Every structure is written in structure tokens, then in C-alpha cells.
Image 1: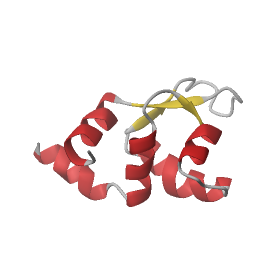
Image 2: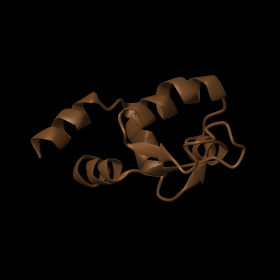
Image 3: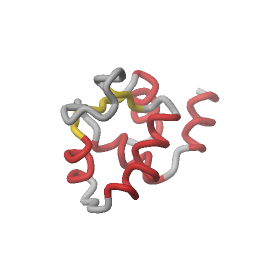
Image 4: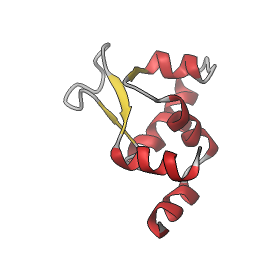
Length: 87
């Protein structure tokens, strides 16, 4: 509980938004669409990269990060945080 609370405190509103829309494996474009975002650089810097670095989402193809078929999904940590803090 305490660790989840500490992590939740580090999660920006942008990362929380990614967690809320990432209910299954999704392409970057699908995530951006679900969040109604147009700017790719903004999305990567403020939404995707922080969520990845916190271990809340993961790539489905970690060996090919730039693959056009790369998808993202919640990790167990991301699912737990979402369930406990961002209902």
C-alpha cells in the first residue's frame, strides 16, 4: 500500500491518463487517439516515456522498440496502481 501510494505520488496526470486508456495492447497511434493528442513528440516525452521508465507500461516487442507494429500494455505494477489509485 505505501509503495503504491509513493509511486502514485510520482505519477503525472499525463501518465495517469495513459494508464486509464491502455486497457489492452495498443499501438502508439491508438494511445494518442484515445487521449485525443496530435503531437507525437509531446506524447512521447510527457506520456509514454515516463510511463515506461516508471515500469507502469511495457513494450510488447522490447527488442524492436521502433517497430511499426510495436504495442504497449500495462505491467502488473501499472494494473495495480490503476486499480488502487485511478478508478
